[in-house]
Image (tube, rainbow, N blue to C red; front, side, top):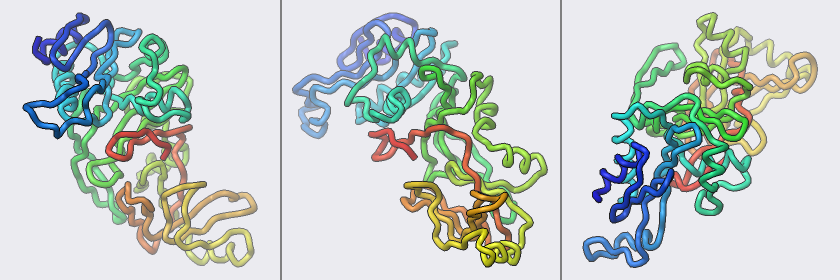
Length: 324
């Protein structure tokens, strides 16, 4: 059978076998023989004897598509799956299996090839809560430090919400990431399944962020960190520094083993504001994975982290799931 026929039959709930694509039961895979040498060339010898999961039919009847970056021609097989799903009523999610495994093992194992989840366990422990719209480009609006709105295109696997064991996760592309965005799978601190993507994104926002947005404040974000504008004066903050209540820092890195660096920061160590972080200047990612966020040098911003419990991102060309 031709590959697109095998894929279509899998989507319809049937099996089938092609040269390199096989649908056995509830699993669709790309499989390559030990002596794989397409068109007489050895350029893809790294695929010899390898197998890649493309999609799995879950216990709820929905389809989980592997969104990890695969080698060609397995990438073409992935695109065939997404194209087939666009024209069916089936609900599906597009999530890198590396990230699913990382969430399943709570970060203990992050490489699907190292310890793949057995199909029966995957079908029982993973579900599609809010389905994906498929791989696509979407327009995102960003505000600069003057509050002016700019638009740009980011590539998305198809934002969705999935369940892994008893936890809910938002699978999406962070538009603050460098280039076309950075993929993440974030655990949502909620006992109820979100009804929509908007509700899932709102779960990540701390109360202070939601209140500021309700007032129309120009709240901005880099990765998991929000910057809420305040009316605090520099003299007020430095007075607390002089009193020993707070400390002034330059190039302060947020969080333990963090990668988000504040150009200027005032951090409260004692008193009723203990733990609060105020910043101005540029917020940058030390590994260059996010676009620089210029907060300006006049207004101080309250820096708060989102409400995710754990997050898993893809690096190294999508080959490994990692904590951010």
